[in-house]
Length: 554
Figure: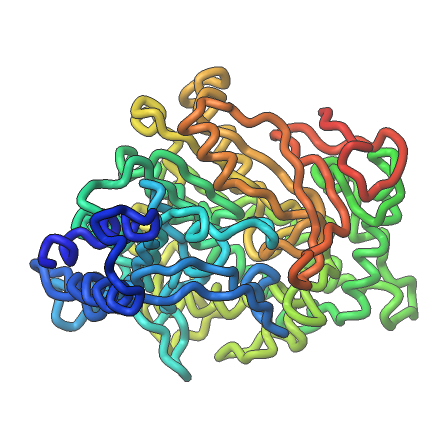
């Protein structure tokens, strides 16, 4: 019995396979022993504490009415598993612990996948749901036999407290920057050894937004830890993003704020100019890079004496131009970067969070920026203003309109070294056989997709294009917003990574689908090619909802 408890997975896998050694054991007894074996994982080892370990029965597919993202509405069908909750003790007694969850499936395929977080984290990533960009109708990673795990990154968000408040503690902020993901990865490996009697054969990391930054951080800081990494919409130049977000809010504080009806005005103008550029009229801008060079907000300027929702004032045009423009620092940050790329065009009126998305969700909100930020403000303002106060100035009462980066240069440099996953030297990751896939959403207003594009091109400059192609891919999805709304966005990147890592099947152009969030069919509404940068979908003929009617070309 002790051996069974120490080797949960091996015994349970044999149990389900009907091994003769356990075939005579009654079903009820099997469950009891399995639960006991799972519970036997609880305990402490140095700073790592296993708080609970519970055997969960298989779960059924469920779809919720509301959630922050399309994918998070879906609770996939998962198999029987041992759910392990634990924490890692801090060194600083004033710092919070690092919370984590590891899910050990009864039938293990020898692989694991770590899920990244989002925003400023502070919420435990359970890793029970779907990973980034995952098709709604595919078996979950757990159902495919992967161990999955995630962390809260070393702090818990508290009701009524700004999400950046934890950053006043140095250890908590360093855990958020990079330490927690490494520590939890190592704790998860130790748990797999205890449960299954061996280390995982292959390890994967998948993250979006902040989790995408974490994914790139792991490739850069810990190149030997993961075999395959997927970074979707990574908030890659983090210091630049927070400052650009603040700037974009400041320019809309007064007359520059743009009303929802005017957001649609801009989006319609962009579509009018750029929709047909790929050869089809499908309400989608397939080449937003060319469109950004073509569209001018000044074309919507109000005539003398004109006002209302059918034109933009000079202050509003300045706000749009500011959003699109590069943010420049007076000094270089980590890896020599001294700016943040401006945002692009298209998807300004994308519905992502409930009835509103695009500019309204991320940039403008439903009310002009306030101090302190309110729930009606855009997320970029909530994040940027709070980031300036708690992370850079470290003054929660700071009037952010008076903030000057030059007065906090040393702190910006410190944070950039911790947070900016901009090191293009992935030579060690490539040398050990690691594979990296990046995906940028071209209608993303939470972070600029051009930051990720620039990073990938910097990797190519550092290592060479041919050498980079051996281990890395960048894909760009037109019309898709930060969380995967607005256009076809779903693709099984976990399967693509496994094929590349384990079968040496290097991916070419892929296909993304837009699915109805309605179980169990999750019907495909539209499909498009997912083109490798720097190519875009070009329409040939036939239905615009069929990916085969497009081809990828420069």
